Amino acid sequence: MAGKIPDLELTPRAGTGKGAARAARREGLVPGVVYGGGEEPQAVTIPFNILLKKLKDGGFMSTLYNLKVEGAEDVRAVCRGVQRDVVKDLPTHIDFLRLKRDSRINMNIPVHFLNEEECAGLKKGGSLNIVRAEVELMVTAGDIPDHIEVDLLEMEIGDSANISDIKLPEGSRPVITDRDFVIANIAAPGGAADEDEDDAEAVEGEEAPAAEEGAAEE
Image (cartoon, rainbow, N blue to C red; front, side, top):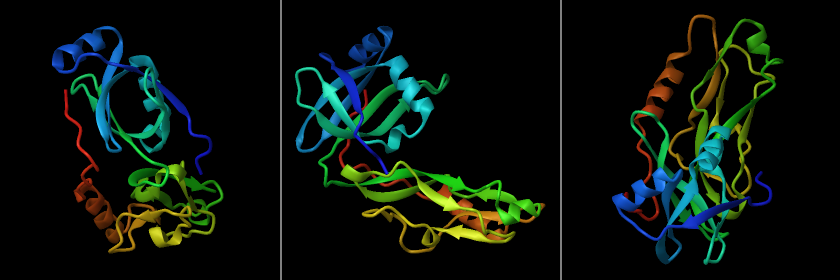
């Protein structure tokens, strides 16, 4: 489970629009906006190098931050979108959504797989077929889990780990409730079971839910 809420320092941005955004990028900053929470959107910037490192470290999109913006009160927020350059795949804009501690929000939570080296099925020549590396959960903003865990220890070839097999953190539940979807299985040598391939295709076909409140692109 997440521990102390980490701080994230941002700088207020005076101008808005494409011109101001380009000027910020020339100074080594990534423009962004903090919106929601019943308040007016606030234009901000974050140093490019700091943002890039956090994105590479992983978990950035599932972390609740205490945003510290000069001249404004601290506010809890999560990142709801990072726009990237289509060629270089580098961040060009970032959106944050303000939250109260008891706010409920959909988050993609990473899955960690335990006891892979001791897994019975893998020892017999099977292979781990990960259908979902992340699971979308509805969580409470003040208690966002860092990850959920799948224990592979006793799984044999042909076994699957479904969402119903996972002990979810208190206050969390899957966004998908109409089926007991597969997270991973132990596939026999030569390929995965058809049902899990179908589930993987279903993952690709699912539409992301709309954000609670929209933010204007720049």
